[in-house]
Length: 160
Ligand code: MG
Image 1 (cartoon, rainbow, N blue to C red):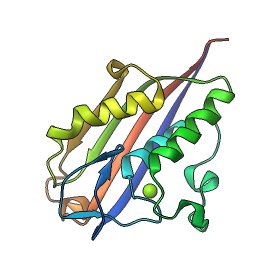
Image 2: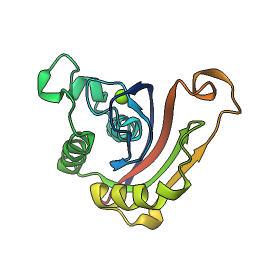
Image 3: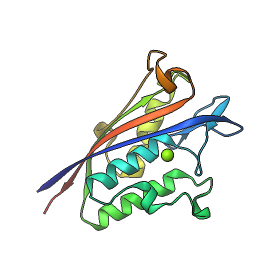
């Protein structure tokens, strides 16, 4: 049995005229997140955590933002590719622990939907996935409501 831990971080700035997508779930809000892709800050951090755990560099290496293939891309498709790549190397996701940092919108009504979405995308029981959201006590860019940050820890296991 082989185990790995991975860590991911991402942040995106709020921008008008875009849907807010977090963890593959559309969250009703007057602003979305600026990005080359759909700006799904949580999915991007999950991708980086998985790639890091598997020793496979980072999301920018696999999906360059200079490549128009990924313009406004549904980030869940990027995550599906990352999951495929780590599975090809024999890794299974053991558990995932995520924290979103934002002042608004309130995430509580959406957390269970995000956990369900991640469990489907990662092929992992929802009991092994945690998604938490907290404010930054009005400090820094998240506290000022300029954007959202996400941090993610993951463990992978290889049975043999
Ligand atoms: Mg990103």
